[in-house]
Length: 395
Image (cartoon, rainbow, N blue to C red; front, side):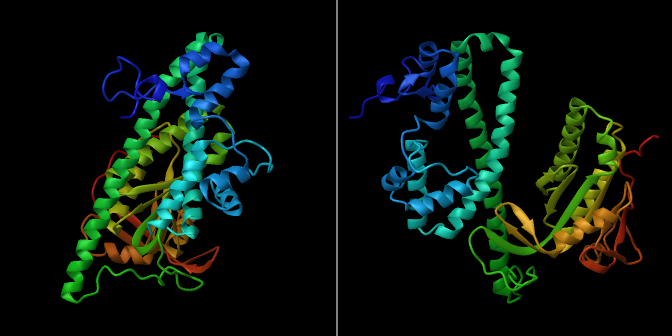
């Protein structure tokens, strides 16, 4: 029979069933640890709480304990986005060791390979580092608002110990919801491909050569190639605008832009891949979804006086999706079309225009070819809505 309770790391006596376990440092409740140390030591105590224990192992010791070679552990560590440390520095925790073991179990099960483990680590490090930066900034702002915590390490530690598990639970829930959404999409595509195979049409079979400009792309975990619509939307005159804004005002504009684009893309059934300064990159499963999304983005931005005008470029074609990012000619073309689009307009490539041809609700007008980086004669098509959308900006 296993022991329970605080001594064994179980729930606190009297804690409600299912309640998050209080954060601990060195086997002691966080509040007790905060009372034992002064402000100077509080940072180390919080670090122990976050890392699941103290920094006790060197690089070589971590490799020996995990069964993963020292060279490979260094590869994974760098891929996660952390700088290398001296051989004799004790910076690794037991949780680091267990994470390496978990990776080895995934490889042994055949789910991933050693090569894709590095790619997975790089993707995780890239996305989670941004999330961590935002979360720490949020906590720091909260601490500065609650001035009593800066004077009382015990109160700070207690409140942090209460809030951090809630944040972790929220992150895990959102991650699982996205897993469920993507699993549903993959199963639907598998059913469609199976039906097409029965009919002998071959629809749904991925073309791994269509997107490659320098040779075929072999299928491997973490990557897929299929026809999709890609869009870039950016704020017109962003650089000029930022010169006249303070930091607080700039944050409000960026928050509003990201909120507006995120909402519209989600409502349209697409996915925001990433935001890059003053522009957002998104993907949609069909040309019509992308067209509706782009037109709605234009209308909503025009109706929002706190935002500058926007412009959008769309392209349809084979897209390589790899660890959450997208690549290929369609992505490049969408970016080039955005750069030459006028404010409050949407430009699309001829492939996407062909997908929309004959569908009600769209007006398409071919423009003269333009010369842009990588394409000497890119032929834009102006997309307009044949239906009334939103209200125009009142200047």
